[in-house]
Structure formats: C-alpha cells, structure tokens
Image (cartoon, rainbow, N blue to C red; front, side):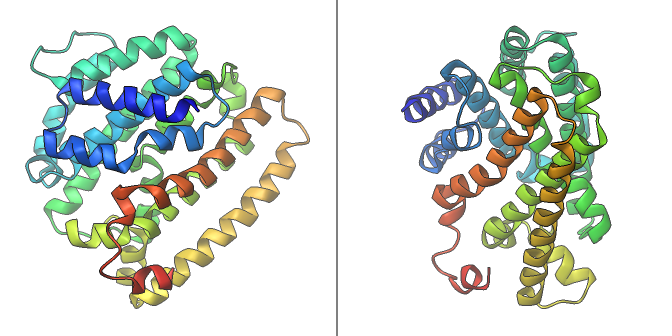
Length: 305
C-alpha cells in the first residue's frame, strides 16, 4: 500500500522543512497525518497522493505554529502582519526569504501544484488558500477579546477556517480530471461542497472537543458555540450538533439526487470525492493520536457523542 510509504516520505519532507521543532515533529509522526490524504483520496495516483499529503502537512504545521501558538494565534494584528509575504509567495510575486520555512515550503508546493494542475485549477486553489489565511485573523481576533462567535457567524466561518475548501480545490487535479468553471460554481456543486464542509467541520468539532476545551476553551467549536448562545448544557449541545449533522446528511443526499440529473462525469467524480472526504476524515480522526489521546481521562464525552 502506498499510504504508509507516502506518509513516511511526507514526514521526512516536513522534518527537513524546519517548520516545526523536534517535539512537535514527533507528535506529527504519531498522529499519522499522512493517513488523512490516503483516507480522503483513496483512488488518486501515488504522485498525486504525495502532493496532497505534503499540502495537508503544511496546513497542520501552519495551524500549530501560527493559529494555536500564543505569539500569533491570540494576536490578530501580529498574525495579519505575517500574511503579506505568504500571499505574495502564493501569487508567485516574490521568492521566500531563506529564513522563512513556511514560505519556502509554500513556494515549493505552489510550483508542484502548477506542474500537476491547469492554470484555472491553480487559481481556484490560490483563492481558497487566501480565504483560509484571512480567516485565521478572524479567529485570532476572537481569542484576543475572549469572544465566542454566534452560531450564524461560526457556521459561515467554519467552512473557511478549517481549510477544507483548500483541499476540495485539489480534488479534481489530484484525480487527473478537470471541473470547468461553470461546473465548480454551479449552485448544486457549491451547495454540496458547503454541506460537505459542514459535515467535516462538525465531525471535527465533536472529535476534537476534549482537546480544544483544554487548549483554547474550545471557543471555535460548534459545541461551545451552541452551549454559550443557546444556554445549552454541554450534553444538550452535543446532541444538537448530532441532529444538525443528520439533517445535513439528508439535505446532501437530496441535492446529490438533483445533481445526478445533469452532472457530467467530472462533476460526478468530484462529488464522489466529497463523499470520500466526509467518510475518510472520520476514519483518520478516530485513528490519529492528534485526537484520540485527548479522550482517555474523560471518557464521558465520547459516550455522550
């Protein structure tokens, strides 16, 4: 199986990048980040899997270093000032500084994606990455003033802050086919992508709640958002998230049936990719030390879910 080999290669790439220190690198190795790409993209060629895997590693590394760290993650102004170099690198308008490991890695990934994708696919990916980067400033601003966002704001922003769309934008390129612009922007495709984002984000909120409530009061977690703004108990909030999740699954199935009446083969492949992501993310999370090691001392939460 290519997955373990690709995971080992990506881990070596991440370690050599100097984006993370030795202790964090070891945690990444135990977390088996590489299995996320394999679980969510089970049919892509090995070379594509390696590229996707490296991109996912960059996202996890950026999240740990910039979004959860005290120096950046709790200071919106500091995080905002750190973005322009990354944005210029993303647009291929400047070369990264020699002492900027995240910029160097992003620059490498950009050029590898350019080799594997069409210009339109690259631009689509660029747009989603920019949205993700700016959304991290929103999260940092919330931490800075100790704010828990409203359910409406959170549901909207969760689709962006989780970087899921940056991964969706590479589904067709990774699979060796292409969605046309009118297909990517079709209302059915956009709705299904949003719903897949919701399902993945809310699954992640349920699976990571125990970890997040220790690290960041779980302020950017749907369980906390509902408990705070709807005066729910944590138990009731967990149940409501599960009910919302089930409603979206039903809506996804209905919208998919509508799409089947007009969709081209590439669109059908893309929607299948969304389904792989929803299922594969759960399988990865349940087997990753990044999440499961947060639960042993407090098993009542897992029973509640």
